Image 1 (tube, rainbow, N blue to C red):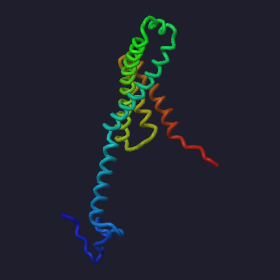
Image 2: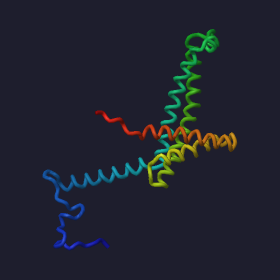
Image 3: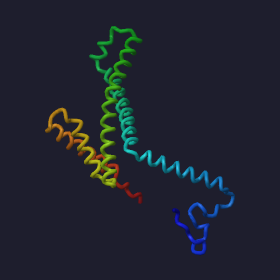
Image 4: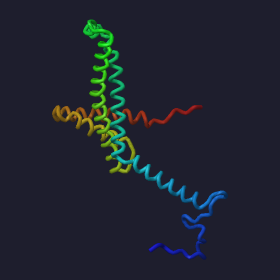
Length: 185
């Protein structure tokens, strides 16, 4: 049962949704603004979702991994031994072989970067949601867990050291991103 407010105590124009409209606005404008606010809140909830953050980190990791891989593969053909391997091929065959190698390398690196990015972002988001804080502890803990998971097939010592290394890297990046900008006096 909704709460009934006595109009003598609180005039009806102070009730939520009953405020007076600014000049030039109609009830249709109010309804449209309320609908827009509801949609904005929904979009904020979707963007804050751990699943969405994980997918975005995976897609971003794939893009970065593919870019760097294609860049490094392109530079690899400056190596004289690789150049000699393709010397007997015609120009279009050489270009096709280089593009095929670049695509294969880009896909492989992209998958690796996507896995690392999605794993780290997903773990960090879950930790942040659980702790209800956004601080350095989240990134260090997520880095330790992600590094350990990524190195788990190499044994417990390697998993621990992978966790320590990834936690250190995460801490360094997070401290750099959280630093205060210098004063411009």
